[in-house]
Length: 255
Image (cartoon, helix red, strand yellow):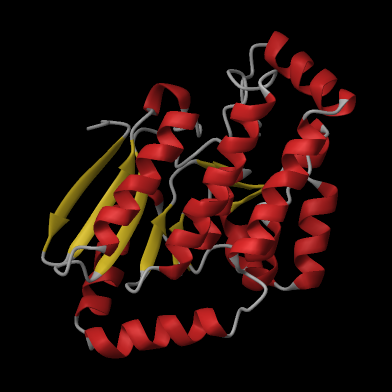
């Protein structure tokens, strides 16, 4: 079993931790596969009442780690499709999902954050989507971001690129809860505990109904999004910009 995602379960609260701290939990092919497998296991566990998604170390997730797949079209496309599936899996869980976001949540990492029902972060965090700065199309993250903060705000964020701090992310609605950094884990657990006190059937039915009210977030849309992103990343503009980023020593879109 992969140790790229660890699982801790207590009192119905299942905590999944992205475990590539040396890479700021950047999303590699193997990490995405491990996360997809872990979410599937949680979804099939009758004891699970709430999911918390977090990252080990100083960052939640620094985005897609494209260095190893940049010149491999098949693996890159597969990686983006896997990220789309993971985002849908988080959204479709019958239990509430909470993102506990410390430090950076960039690009695909911020996408995982908004795929969760709730997100807790702190004022100093850096969150956002700098893909267009790198010549990349943020297609996979767009559908869920639009549902989270609205079409107008999502257009502004995705077209201008860059990142915002945790306070601004909370104002925009990217994060649903804001606390001081030292209270992040406790706050996430407190929210999870309150959710566990609710009716399991009522929560599951409410989540299922909310998903039905989002007909545009479906397998077909997310599959097309992954294909769009893969096509643009293979193009000369993105290849050149990413090559420059890698040569400067920065392997993922971070700040």
